[in-house]
Image 1 (cartoon, rainbow, N blue to C red):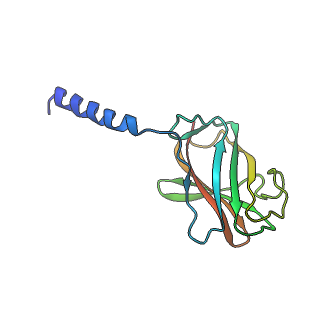
Image 2: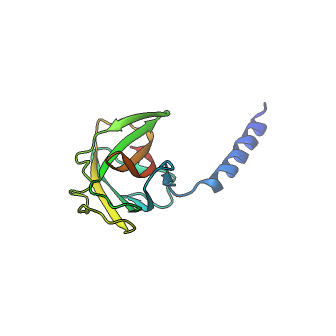
Image 3: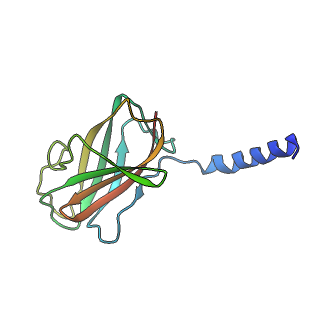
Length: 154
């Protein structure tokens, strides 16, 4: 293949992909048995124009999830996994209790909007990788919400 053909193919691919780039897409990963839904996700220093949120090593990241539940909740627990190359790796939070230190006080009333917020350390020893963060809020054995957050650790 000539250099001109290769350059033309590369330019075409670039033109096709650039317009499809968009702001970070916070996807719903809850199954049909989830008892809640999220309406807004915020990640500190995540620019609306970025396809993935940049999490800088040796700093803190703040995550906020605004959600409602179709049931009253007496407890709320955060469960976090990093998905790297299709594998879910558990992530230990400094505080997984969604009713303490998260801006919420349980019990939570059904059909009411709440904002869960937490800050987590992005440790210096974390590898520089692209990762999808799977953030779940659970009440007992029930899934309340599940959010997939595209991220890059830098």
